[in-house]
Image (cartoon, rainbow, N blue to C red; front, side, top):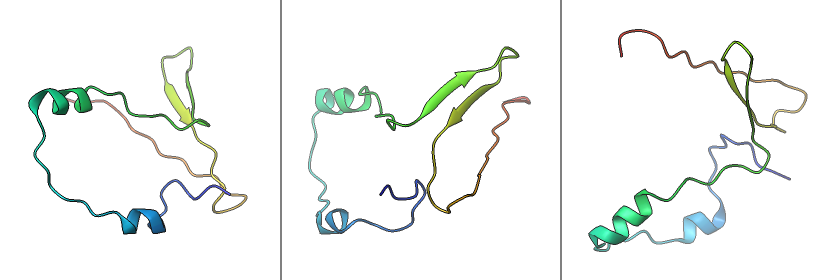
Amino acid sequence: DEPHVASPTWSETALDKHYVDQPIGKEELEGFLNTPLPSHPKLVRGQLKNGLRYLILPNKVPANRFEAHMEVHVGSI
């Protein structure tokens, strides 16, 4: 089963990792920052004829429910 996308719980393996600040070179940092972010394999992207872009991601939790978010890019910024 897939966890909910916005699950507030941490996996056991994530809690076991020790995050230590280690020096990193400029080239290594630039390479990391230029690496594309991975996309969820079930993410569907599209665009309607009127230009509206959309994303669809299946969500199992809660069952038999629909969740929608709208982001509007308008204004002076």
